[in-house]
Length: 268
Image 1 (tube, one colour):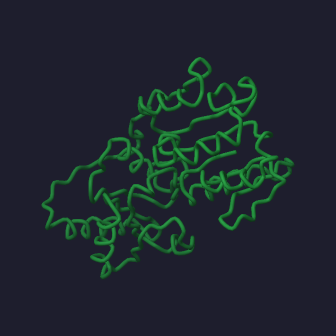
Image 2: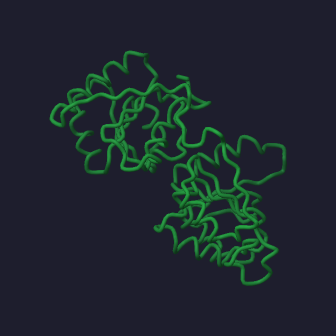
């Protein structure tokens, strides 16, 4: 079972895995909001809330789970997911966990995945699985920008930010007819303001919404977003990220920058 932090990330994971399983006999299923999830699955992908509801309605399946993967674990282990995770751990026995009220040596092996791993996240993982059974595997470049990403800081007064942003976007659009640029804002209100200010821009601008039509995503050249779009989302045509506002936390900055320079990118 794979837990994804957003609906779009859930769909992206499902799509990628589905490309690898043809002719293997492995069945991949995705939790849907309408409760129409197939029961005959080997891999189940869903958001925490949908996975919780699925196992509440299909308790006979939970004991068969061998692996429970928390994608973007530092976000899923946040306080906002505590209640739903507690319910999932009560339904799915986790090996070597204090939540396992039966045989602690049996149950699902839990895997925490994240591009960032602050010390507090390790502490939270320690609260789920007995520390002596935890294994941390870290890249030597953890918490570092990709080497092929160029970072530039531009000093600008608040009242001039929209005008300067328009200039930068115009320069970006000259790279070709396909590339996209994502503009990150500190909150939804600021993103809405920037979106409204760019309505007269000559290229298509849209607000990020994980539930929007994928065709709309394809046709947009400029995407206005909050940190909700910084986690795990793969946009191959993205060539630039612009921070209209700096993020409140360095971890969020790393995830924003991580939208570009990716292996699938057309603009490495």
